[in-house]
Amino acid sequence: MAVEGQKNSAESRSIPSLRWWIGGILFASTVINYIDRQTLSSIVSLMTSLANGISSFALFRFLLGAGESANWPGASKAVSEWFPKRERGLAAAFYDSGSSVGGAIAPFLILPVYFRWGWRVAFVIPGMLGFLWLIGWRWLYYVPQEHPRISDAERQMILDETQEINTAGKSRLRWRDLLRLPQTWGTIISKALTDPVWFFVTDWFPIYLVAKGISLKSGLLAVWVPFLAADLGNFFGGGVSGYLIRRGWPLGAARKALVVFGGVGVLLLIPTIFTVNLYLIALLFGLATFSYASFSTIANVLPTDLYRSDSVASVSGLSGTGAGIGTIIAFELIGHLSDARQASGIHSFDPIVIVAGLIPFVGMILVLLLVRNTRATDQGLVRRI
Image (cartoon, rainbow, N blue to C red; front, side):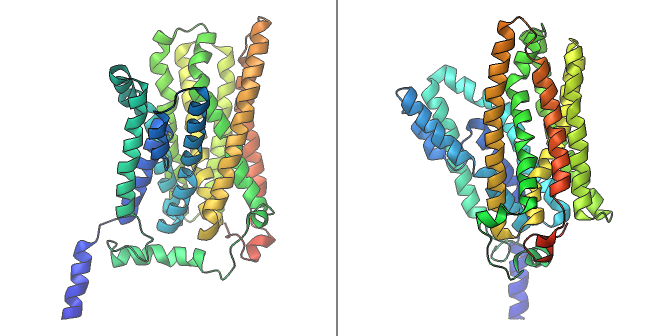
């Protein structure tokens, strides 16, 4: 009777669908991240208010980026520990959508503070949000095996699959071992050839409208379209791939179907060079970013599909590095080409938009070629898809 009473007591203290509460706090992390790119660096965000020159400001922002970058590898690892394969895509979409939400709400949160109390206080607010998030994270997050608030049924459901990932009896792979695998390069490329396009859209879309002769005042509503479409695309990619898995599709086929959808869909950026109609441009950009986000969700979930738990964050970090390098190169080239063509009196954006539409398509082809079952799969170095 005592044992039965203890079991019932434990069940009554459990949190229903605890894995989705974990997904929710990962989403909150990404939202805060994009409010001031500050996840796991709230301290740095506070220190930014102490900057007294360009050098100190640049140093603090460099540290800010270094802290921010841990969000996606950490979230990927948490998803691999807490979600079965049929739900991983949707979980990745959930936390990744926080980037669009954070970017959208940041002006409404930060600008009133800036105008009332100045820029230094505007940096303090996101820093404090980071501390509040950290308290919640420390309270909520444990691995499923050790969590005191998980129900027995949910724990068993999670461990039935994740134990298969984590108990392959292999030693942890080093970075140089990971970089020998084609699957790793496919994962890196999936980010390196898609993320720069997203940052181009978010940073240059208003300028593109102006270059088309559209005033920002009349195009203000259209500027929101890529963000909203990307949010929907995140959940479309994660939800549809999970649906296909539940319908009996192999894991690899379900993921690659969304990669193809995304790579082809981003080509819709290219027709925008032939029109100056605001509504048509907004529609095409919206469809393209919807497609990009579907591809991006799969890119985020690939490390959890392919690798054991002790390698997931490493591969996710490598793909994030590839995305960062790709974005730096892309922005240098965009700026140089835009300046050169503007000086010659030629429309500056047409070749940039064409390349932006083509690059994810090339990435799609490479992902299809590289992310596949190989001899490394048979050796247990990566999971079968």
